[in-house]
Length: 111
Image (tube, rainbow, N blue to C red; front, side):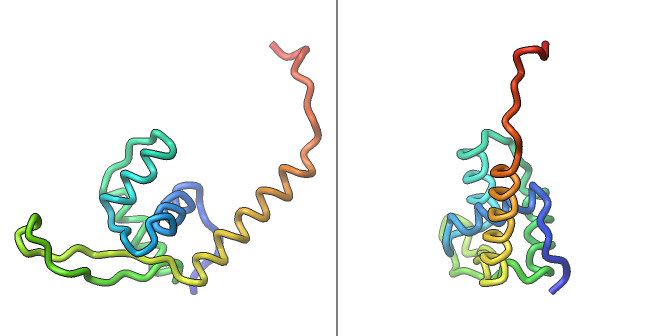
C-alpha cells in the first residue's frame, strides 16, 4: 500500500464513498460531497482521486450491472476497503486529538 496519509480532497472522496456504501460511482460521490459541503466538483477531479485512492488500497472498484438509461453500459462502482476505513478513523482521531489540545482563543482584541 502506497502512503497512508490523506489530503483534504482525498478524505472527502473517501468519506463520500463510505457513506454511499456500495452505491458509489463518480456521479453519486460528486452529489454526496456537494450535498454535505456545497462544493461544486468536476467528475474528472473525483475520478482522478478515486484512481489514486485505489492505488493506495483505500477503495476497490468493480463493474456494476448494465443499465437501460446508460444504453446498456455498465458503471464503475467503488467500495471502501478495510485499509481505507482504518485510515479514515486514524485521520479523525488525529484531528480530534489536535482539537482537544488547542488552547481556547480570545478574539476580543483582534479586528
